[in-house]
Length: 324
Image (cartoon, rainbow, N blue to C red):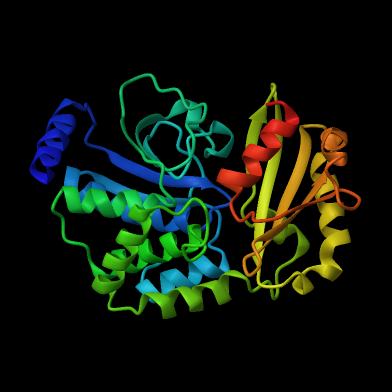
């Protein structure tokens, strides 16, 4: 079966008309660890498997969690993406144009690696696309390395392992699949790390809010989505206890309201997720707040039991309520 996959991959590669230019590999706006790490690893995979010249880019600085993973891997953060206009691009961890870098309308998207629902990306030419229903882009990348029989360096193993542990919330998220667990176990061996201990340390870093401003908390993992010819944004912060944010709720609500002030956004929401109890408090502001009001346990807050994932739980629920 693996030999069959290699044959198919070789055929796909031969059919693609990719110019011999530098290919930019970039993740979504307000990058999380998967977006940062997968861009770096995908750039290395494209060099090894396709022979391309590549550069990994990011649409923002790494979070504290991402910086921790980069340090563990001994890898520098990607350069900041200013524009992709006139460039050939691989997108990782998104296909929604609202999350794309500047100049995307004047770029040639030649490849995608993603684990979300298919967004509104439209390309002029055929592209190579790897979109799997798994918990993390790095799980797909691990399998691509295996299918291409390419050796995984320790640095790339740590990057992929960190991304998987982060995106699946140490395998607790409903987005986590058997493929994610298998990949993480294999990568931990390559990296020479104790999987349980690594995940535990990563979760401590992930839930540390010290030194972060209110604006940076909202921006930490904020994503913009199109709804009925308008736009909404939904962010998420993960905590170990709601005591960490009790004195910040009012300021967070004010920040969300400010994001809607220009009229561009109909709703700004923030999932405050306790990863210890799997309870999320959804804060919301904006013109469409009245659609959520009947579900609120207190003013402009919806309490959601057994909810860890924006992709599989929070955003689908919001789509239903908003009639998207």
